[in-house]
Amino acid sequence: MQQRHLGRSGLRVSRTALGTMTWGHDTDADEAATQLMAFTDAGGTLVDTADVYTDGEAERILGTLLGEVVPRDDLVIATKAVARRTEGPFGGGASRGALLTALDGSLRRLGVDHIDLWQLHAWDTNVPIDETLAALDHAVDTGKVRYVGISNYSGWQLATAATTPTTHRLISTQVEYSLLERGIEREVVPAALHHGLGLLPWAPLGRGVLTGKYRNGTPPDSRGASTHFAGYVEQHRNDRAARIVQAVATAADGLGTSPLCVALAWVRDRDGVVAPVVGARDTNQLLASLEAEQLTLPPAIRAALDDVSAIELAYPERPLP
Image (cartoon, rainbow, N blue to C red; front, top):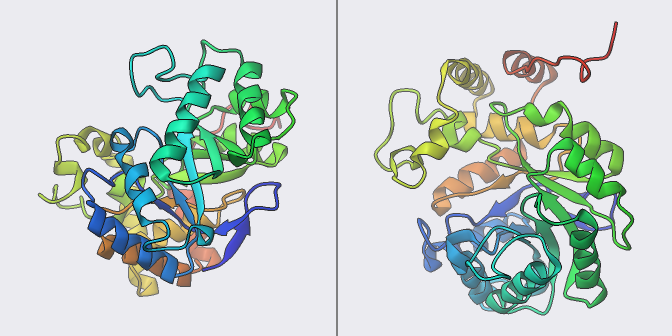
């Protein structure tokens, strides 16, 4: 698997990341171990998790696999904080106290002495950004964190965080990005490129819709049929999505590959993208995603997909004539 630098930094990561949001819920510890082995065997290095995934169970499972299944030094471990874990005063949010409490919890669950990439899971309107970023500086200065990033920030929030004086600057932003969700191209992508943050797209397969599995209904074993993910998937099931999914399927037929690989290759090679975060319920799903490593879309097909999925840019995103 090819390696890329994450943003304007010296950190190199695999150009596909392994997501763990299902670990501890739809994916048990044994299946997680098999996924991790398959991922690293393919050359993958970047594993993404968060302190709130399955109430911390995703981090705990990953921690049990380090050393036993995969050497710690073979992975770039990324996790997140800010989302609320408990109702206590330090149970969530982006205050100094809440962040450093969350960091200690993540280190404990992962069983490591440092995190390679620590990300702010969301913007906190109740905390001054300089307090939040000072906590990130402290985490790096104490050796508990190597690099810092953000997630789910809008364009103005990213720019504000990137230009607030800090000792250790942000190197990445994790956002939803796919052929079905291109809204970040209006403000977030230009801001990230300008300030040197690498993009880590989550839901690069349009929450599973771009695989084509929902074209003729809802498979009973899919996320769309589950009680906890049905609404998550439903947001991308509409007439526009159907046209895009058809175009992806047509491209896949012409290339002799899967719609999944076409959709993943498209987002992986967009400007500023470093590594799409691919989550899988089981190893077979993960292996299907890893096949995209061999695919580079021809310019004509890329242009056709760009066209069918294009979003409307209005003033001021669209330059004046």
